[in-house]
Image 1 (cartoon, chains in turn yellow, green):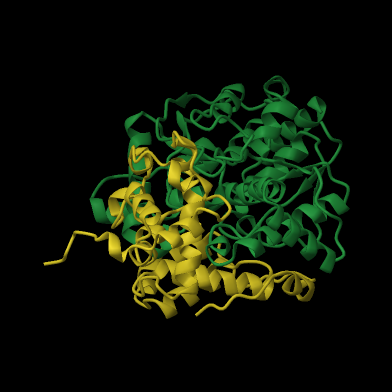
Image 2: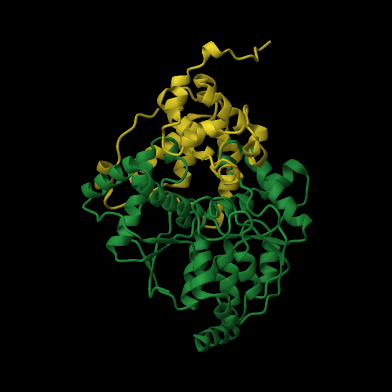
Length: 188
Length: 309
């Protein structure tokens, strides 16, 4: 049986302090644990830890649990938690910050297509300056689970039929300058 | 009201949301408001870029803001909710966090772009409501609404938390604009609940469930269609209904429109120029509500639109 208890000695309070110094994460230690975020989140029922528990894990310093959770990737950035939080904590920014660290430290759950999508989107936009839905979907599916493509056939055809899915890959004219403006990050 | 608005379409309006661009341009033409597209604009970074690299995500949005400033636009029209939020958030964070401000400033210097200043990021909903006004829209209506009741769905990113487009907890401007165009609306309590964004592509069953809930609630409130302000919401609600029917056995088949399609129709736009043929779900209702008129009527409608202008 999986152990549900957490022990203080496994925590890294120094990491929690560092997180609280990142832009948007300042309110971390003022959290009341009221649970409004989890209540208002449209995705909390699909998460392994609802937002309130993620905040609790982070501020105690349970770094690995937070960074390897599915929760941070299920966050769709709807900002509902952020506008409802009685302490005005930018919970969405905390989630973003954890996502970035999970990518950097390669701690994200490997079976999830969402971090794969984020990385492919990043590469596409860095490479061309614009996103193209078709290529993005193809690359995400080929890297995570090609079976996803089967489920996309019907929708894909509907979009092509109505002229809403282009095979063209858009690119901005001044892409070389844009690339010099963006700092490179290592992604898978 | 500025004499011309800068226009940032964003990637989605050139793809799944092409009907949004078509109807937006038609609507602004009918209202005689010139739009000028930003030259060589780039992707706003949306939510995914932010998940990899925060600083560069702000640089992406900042480049577009600087291009608007360079083109001497005071107001930049941004129809996509994700772009709107990314651009507004960039403005807030550049001002609030010196380290982000410095990175953005340095990156703009590399591209020989002007530093950021006070370009106003505007969503068409806000421009139509405050700059144009309901009175003017009402006075320009030349078509009586023959369709049913609609639910106005604002989605999440347009109204939170850096937005000035409408009230965050209870936005009403789309409903009010619909009323001005003679379109009856229903009370829709899920109007700011998230559609899941890209989750329909990544966590398919989760995304479908979120959209199923939104559709079901609209039906329950007596709406026959949902009106949206965001290309991603429109695509999610529109493109997956056949799959929702198959999975749940429920008979959902409702058209999902952009608010610009409905307003431009009331002001005399025709089916072709509003992208109404690009609907995937509820096509029967679309054809019923927006009949193709014979050329004479269309010319008359156009003439009338001109006379109003």
